[in-house]
Image 1 (spheres, rainbow, N blue to C red):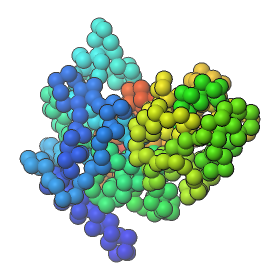
Image 2 (image 1 turned 180 degrees about the horizontal axis):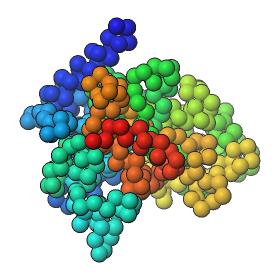
Image 3 (image 1 turned 90 degrees about the horizontal axis):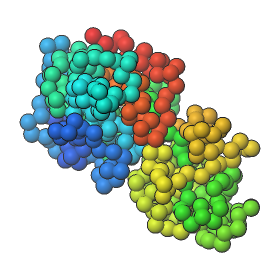
Length: 406
């Protein structure tokens, strides 16, 4: 066996041990959501900022043991960790899953006389939400609200941490807003032999400014001006051509190792390791948004889900094409042609114990499949201000899961 094969074999053994003991950190357990009696609307993006990374090794969760349904599908806890950008999608999905709401709910799942969930016409089932998606992959329905065929939990850290955690066998899904090749400095060949890249949505990564900058009439910058700012070539807004605002620029960046930072450097500066000159770096999108609100002259890059009326994106002119922060504009930051557009990833590990030795076990396939429906794209992606996948991409990604359905 090759050294790479030995390494993967060791990871399989470690993953099996973790699943059997139910090992998950206290932070990850706290991230379990949607199990309240209200049907599990769940934790939204604004709630994730105070959580830290899930330390999955060294602590065990009492009472959590691996069991199997009659089909042989593992019903152990499904764990995910990583990017704060992907967190709103993944955690909201986890919340809905754990609620296992009935189709009579109408708000979180199904339809009633008052409301209907998006994409219901392509589903129309009498099964509870987690029962429905899990049963397609061989899990026995529980037919009980708040009791899914297997529970899920999502921890909050960084893209690089999420990628490392899934590769090390500490979690089932590694959430990342940057490609794992850039996060871990891998070749594409190593990526393809180690993990499967499950893309669940896209983010039109915006550049935002503080209210005083907007009030000064700065609603648009060129890509070159943004590069100058983040590489320290200008320090005052008045130094930019066409700008009449005498205010020092306060440059806010995401932490190194975050997918948001990696993607920004790749797409805006041309290289994942491009030099930057910033005033502060913050670990989470929520912290970036708070600093933009609190500091004059501020500029930052972040994920779309964390923009708001007080933290608004600006338009960017890329070589004569202006991309507006308006969904109805001819060229918009919400479109896949926007140069700062990026994929949002849920990486899973290729393991010998998976069906066919592939890159997803049945729990992972069932959970990820939920996001690859019109319901999932509207509810977990679009409602979090991200960009749904085009139909052609959805069909391609869903087809990869078909052979695992039972």
